[in-house]
Length: 228
Ligand code: DX5
Ligand code: ZN
Image (cartoon, rainbow, N blue to C red):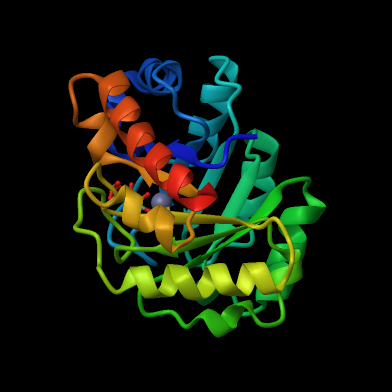
């Protein structure tokens, strides 16, 4: 398995030709697809639901898909997204009264479970549920929109979460979501992240392959430094 995974966020893709645009991002070297679901309640934006996920699976997008649920309530959507083809389902602790039950529900529906931590959300939400997690997402912007600037304080939080994962001696993935670009990806990797959501940096460029290659070059430097 690759040490670092790039996850194109389709929030910034061209919705008029979503399947095609996603396939282009995979052909250019994207490792997993990040599918942002926003409800105009938990966040001030409204995006796509399970029917769109199902259409993408029917279009033969077979890559791993992480469904990032920014909705409140959240539980009733879990079975629908699982049935429509989600591999990972990521939820935010503020969107459920019973985070343990919500994470178990994700697993019971055959998906991997992810927890997303907003810039202002404390990491002690991990205390009693870390064993149930397959991925932790550190939000490096406040959720709701693509194209926002990376919040620099997120670096410390990534380090803290990395420490918690290492202490738990598990293989939980550490994903970072928001404002990642060619200039900051190496610092984010050095802090301990291994999955990088790439939205506007990728989809607002004219050549996805060039962008992905540049991001990988930055990550290779980090990998080299980490093993030497
Ligand atoms: C923000 C979303 C992100 C967003 C990232 O709420 O969760 O996944 O698409 O987009 P960029 O990479 O443009 O910050
Ligand atoms: Zn997201």
